[in-house]
Figure 1 (cartoon, rainbow, N blue to C red):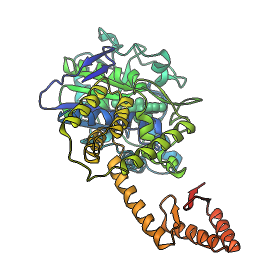
Figure 2 (tube, helix red, strand yellow):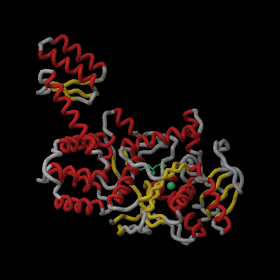
Figure 3 (cartoon, protein in one colour):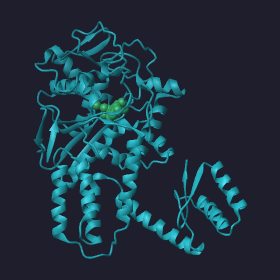
Figure 4 (cartoon, rainbow, N blue to C red):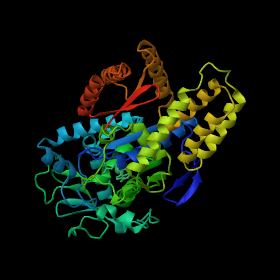
Length: 483
Ligand code: AMP
Ligand code: ZN
């Protein structure tokens, strides 16, 4: 497999450090609010990477942190802790906020078929790991104390900037919010490892440490959690592009200074989801959630398909029109899968191997997911039998995660039911969004119309409209949708 490495700025053949396991680390969400669909683009693409590695036969161990302390409103160590901000906004405790939004995040992941990492670790559970690292950095002169805080001394490094091929604008994302200079810093890029002093004295969570009661900086948590669960080296570290600087740059600085050797081989960065007015961001408050998409009648997996249709190293513009197209394409994909006959023919091994090779070539080329999706359409077009096609679709979907087989089975069952209902209702076919109560009302209206009782038909239509349902007449009966 070839994977682009942001650290070397090249596509490189992927070779794990150890033959028995691929160690993968992912920066998790800051749980002070719902994840927006931009955040989730990053998690979808990381999920595809993990699943493709597993599909290729690697044994992957994946670790993710949950940021529940220390991420300040500017990534550059100033401003208020985001968790405190969330707690104040909702009049709840920081721990309540963390629990609520962690659960909400994994619920969104479930709807998007994003697998839960093998280890999920909240930042607040690993204070001992951070203090161990910070103590050694102080001993070896990579860190210093000033104004009550402990800082990492970036001037001690031969090379600090690792990911400087990105747009200046991308790199500046983390420091955009009018950063005030911290006078305790010896160098501009030095960053806080441990806070005891902050302008925001009401920090809710504090721990004892050799440097006073305080709390960890945001960057140290990912080094500490990764080393706790994955040891002294990593194969792949992932995150959104805004994490490259300063967060990942600082993770590398402190981890390699602490370990005395190279830490992580591959860096995978997912470009942003933007709206027409710019980057989608939680702090700006203008963001779309999975629940909002559902309320508007979209299947979360149509959003997953939308993400897969473009490459993770290109920024992606979200518009409702684009999502409508993805939803339409997703519906057709399910319908075409459902139309296959699971009993037709035997699995043709030669065809399966040939198609698997094509899929492997697409996905193995730096995760070309749009070609991966094209491979699904190619399977549907094959002249092979239903058994062969379904075996291939199920195989590829282990990586793409579109829920094709389950959704197609559900559609087959729903179609069979509506066929049965139609023969029971004198040949009238009702199609809709799968709500039996609405189906029954729409059927009564269609029957009234057939019996030329237009007063009753109109009054049912009014009742449905009042409930937000629009009915359209079709050749076989009626169809309805929520508006
Ligand atoms: P956060 O919860 O802010 O710590 O972010 C969680 C993940 O989402 C990180 O990997 C970010 O880099 C990523 N991210 C933030 N904004 C976007 C966006 N607009 N598009 C894609 N990924 C994003
Ligand atoms: Zn991180």
